[in-house]
Structures are given as C-alpha cells and as structure tokens.
Length: 62
Image 1 (cartoon, rainbow, N blue to C red):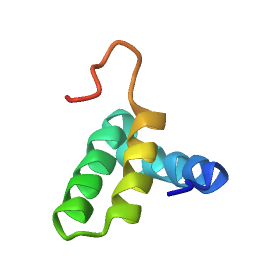
Image 2 (image 1 turned 90 degrees about the horizontal axis):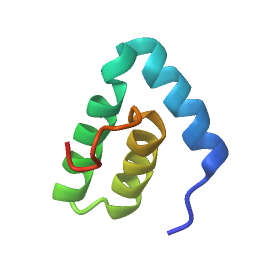
Image 3 (image 1 turned 180 degrees about the vertical axis):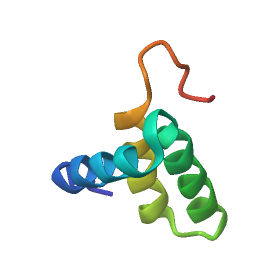
Image 4 (image 1 turned 60 degrees about the vertical axis):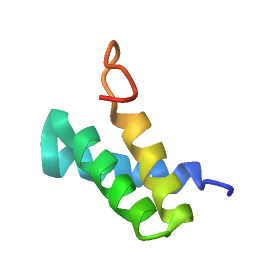
C-alpha cells in the first residue's frame, strides 16, 4: 500500500490537537481495530499516523 504522507501529516496534527501527547495511542488503537476487521490499508494508514506522533524514546510496540 502507498501511504499518502501529506494526509498522514494532516491527520496526525488533528489527532494531536484533539488527544494531546497521547494521540499516538489513539491512532495505534484505530490501527489495531482496522486490522482486526481486515481493513489493512486503513490499518497501515493509522500505523503511519501513530508513528508520526510517537514520542522519541517510546518503543513502537508500546
């Protein structure tokens, strides 16, 4: 899948505005839910958003 990085940046900004510093956890939860429902492209998108928001020093699996 090709991720639209501009859209990832826009959504990441909005998620951070809505959920603060823990926005990456919200995005990671959405990625997990999408992948469980076999919406793989959507899951990849939300994983990219989570990666964009994840603070330095936080492991990807947390």
